[in-house]
Length: 238
Image (tube, rainbow, N blue to C red; front, side):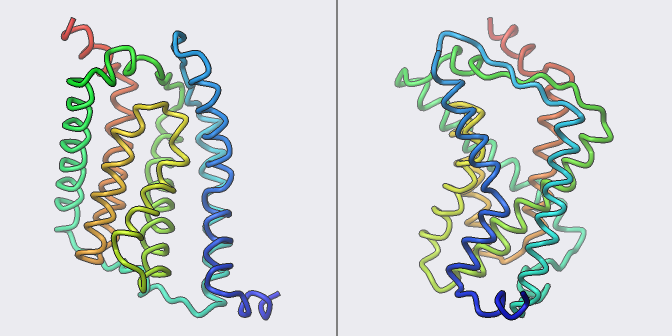
């Protein structure tokens, strides 16, 4: 088996890693997208449960271990992923999250001004949080490391010979492909994430700030669902 892994071409290695990492999520998200958007007059609610969270954590942990095993056999080292850490990266992660949110909000306002989206777009897909904080904490930690390790750390290293615009664009597209279950609003969250994260990593080659930014965003999203911040904001805006 190890000899077979060593003989893989870089393209086949990339395909295997991406299928292991995101294939199942892309399939389920695509199904969700077509179900959700088959009737735009209906408001859809995705229930986020502890059982679902634990299932994702287990899958991502096992998949990441398999991917790490494959990469180790193929002579990848931990230094390839730029995982050096300093406390300053916490603040950089917060700044990245802030910039990403500003770009997303500006994008939404522009589309709102030209009547492409409206309040019904915001309400079309909603989330019901039924998870406990143990499973939420695990998701925040594991998922943030998992996605950025594969989609940024690995992906950018494997395609480092190509133009950065192409790598950033492909990385963003893959990220978007497993978030389509969120409906059209995913464009205003995932596209800015892909662009900002990709540009930062290309420019500075530091992975931890992106993991931290991802974790903070997952935390804020969970708190928002728990305290119903978005619904309260809608009520204030009348």
